[in-house]
Length: 72
Image 1 (tube, rainbow, N blue to C red):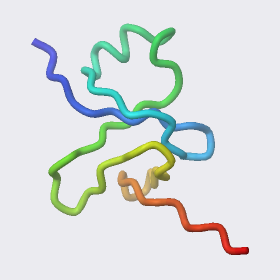
Image 2: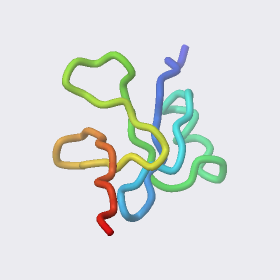
Image 3: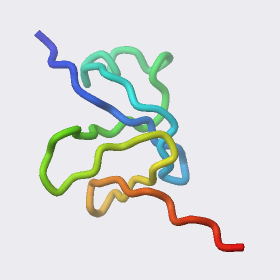
């Protein structure tokens, strides 16, 4: 059985577009439905941030963070 988990869709600027509960196998088998880069995110992992729409993905740390506010 394929394990369902949380995956964040990442755009070309490393911004999270969406978070879905799905298996890695399903993402890989359905590229037309899940285009682009999908990165696993964790709700209860210590020292990891759960992704939400608008969060930014840091590939070096394999973690997510809130975007910095725009200063005006």
